[in-house]
Every structure is written in C-alpha cells, then in structure tokens.
Image 1 (spheres, one colour):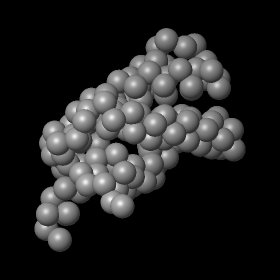
Image 2 (tube, helix red, strand yellow; image 1 turned 90 degrees about the vertical axis):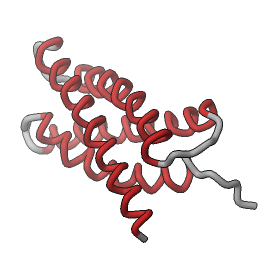
Image 3 (spheres, one colour; image 1 turned 180 degrees about the vertical axis):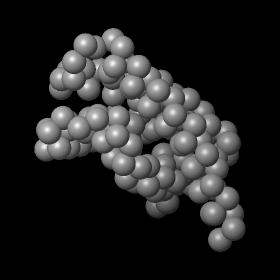
Length: 136
C-alpha cells in the first residue's frame, strides 16, 4: 500500500512538472504566437505544449516513477499512443467548453480538463505502458 502511494506521489510530482511545461508553452503559443483564439490556434498550442511535456514526462516516469527495465522503444510507442489520445481529448474538451462557456479563458478551461486526464493517465501508464510483466 505504501509502495503504491509513493508511486502515486512520484507520478504526481512528475506530472505537475510536466503540466507546468505544457501550460507555459500552451499559454505562450496561444497568447503570443496567435492573435486570436481559434480551433487551429488551440490545436497548435495544445500539440506543441503536449509534445514537449510528454517527452519530459516519459523519461521521468520510466526512470523515477515506475523504475522499470523494459525496452524504451516499446514503452515510448505505448506512451505516445496514450499521449496522443489524451492530447486530442484535451483539445476537443477545451474547444467544446470554450464554445459552451462563451469564449471564457482557454487556459482556465484547460486546467480542470487536464486534471481529469491526469487520473486516467496514471491508471493506464501503471497497468499498460510501464507494466513490467507480461500476463498470459
């Protein structure tokens, strides 16, 4: 139980660091690079922020959180499959909520969306991406 709690705490720390990278890059691109909010600008800001943050997070997760000795290539493919799915969900949910909330601040919308995706990500990384043993 304590081992799992410690793993979750480490995952939370790695995720918070990665989320900070993601949010900073997202905010910079959506506010500095693009003059106005659009589906395209939200997608580009989300994609670039998420790509940078996920690469950072992958190595933290593999070596610091889960400490697994699995082939990096296979874990990276699984990890990025999950990351792409989470990125698309983040983009779609932010876009939908932005539209429904009459152009509310996109960064304030993104934060709770990504918190929800955080919990989903922990479960899937633990049980699928960084799983040590193959179950038959």
